[in-house]
Length: 166
Image (cartoon, rainbow, N blue to C red; front, side):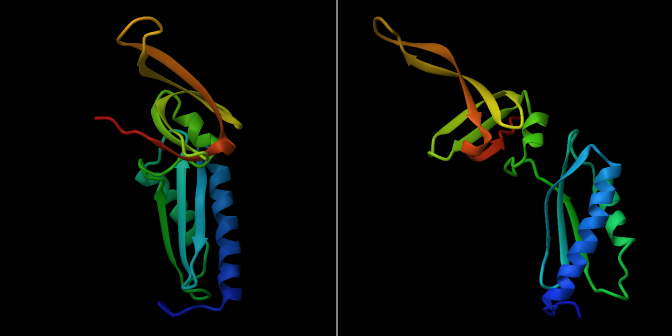
């Protein structure tokens, strides 16, 4: 059956079962949360998770086992992939912003403005960024370094990524 397209009725049943098992596993592990889950037409289940304290390989194994060990391969042929949201993945949930307070973000707003700054605060509605910029002196020639701040509503963010600095 692998590699062949499965009727959508079976895919939907498999997705519902997998979602229920996934939710039970996440209820057990409150520090982990779902970023995305999909079931392809070939019954390929893909789960992307994140965690308040990051995600270890053991966390992915825990979620994988919670799903795989409770689905019957005799009943449904499937593949399962559980992975963590990568460091370069865009932030999509308020919970991800909260766990990244203190880190530097690159934020693109819906009006195509780019801001790179330190994430000072985050809640379920907005984030607060702070950064330094060079601006012309108010009087005389030359430039002066100023600290800027912006509060951005989550609904106004097109994309936000953590900037990894080495």
